[in-house]
Image (cartoon, rainbow, N blue to C red):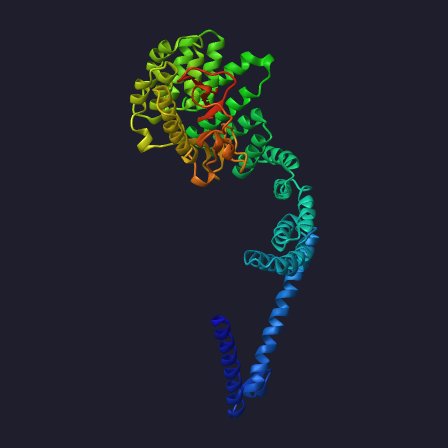
Length: 494
């Protein structure tokens, strides 16, 4: 606004100055005397100015004529485009001006104006490799997707602009949700420009979503090769993709699946699912020491209940007392970790050593009262012969207690019951972490259907010795049974 006002003021000042100058010239006496061939001409000031303007115009015409003569001379000497270049020079100037104006309009968000300027530039320049780019971007900015798609298709005909056309149509298909076509276009764009980082990311995400783990690993290696991915991040994601590939292999490829799982564990020893799958592969090969070593290394990096379950699979028929002794090699790594304390408590409950279980759980019921901790306390109280009211009190607290660590997406914070290579909500690759979920995302399994079993049983339901405590997804409930079980019996769902 201020700049427009300044320009108006300057324009008015120039007009006033010219008017005053002409008035002064008209009032000036005398003039300019010109002698030509012994003939003198006396010109007034105004005539002098008019003469100078005419001379400048004549000089400009002379330059144009000279330029035309030079172009004609070049044409006669074999330059076939000399004359055409002479006449199109002015058109090119107008075309590039329109192109520049279109770029400015596009940057300003004026899509319709940019489209008009692109059409004008094409009229003067006849350079579709330049003007079509502007036209496509302008059409997208204006919301005219059909026009943009038409222009992108025109770009496919020129080798110089083919990548831009493929990329543009690919992004349109992604916006429409047509991931199948977008995947094919992403592969084509990647083949045209394998170093393009955005294309690599789109292709990798689509391949992971389509569970094309082998193709995703090739794309990931290309990102590393062209310097678009740090080496440590590459190793982690390579492990995730190798693990996913191993899990999807059929039974006929069991040997290859084991080797791929072991490779995934080698690339990322702290990847919990990879460690479990690799350990099971070693167990199938009758190599329990290798399996134990893999699980202990993963436990030292991040304790997890599934690692303990995998460690138990190494010797499934051992006695509870022998299991406690063997698990000492696992629990000694992080003795103060909450997962270690809960594991030791559960092992002692299985061995009916309830005082030892109470000592193992320590003060977690006060410092970290998760649902699992409180249900373990209920099992301990039950095993030591406490009243049913005490047991129900612990279970009631467990119903409303935090769930504890879960598989949570670092990107969208959605909670997953099991680990997966990609988030089912946002589609991000390798974003699931074992951590406490946001309070609003925590849900208890079974919900309100558990409430009658926890706070009290109906009159015709068995109580006391006619009930048993079972663990369902880390939540212990009192479940009616057809046959009475001994006090303190604990069953844990796998």
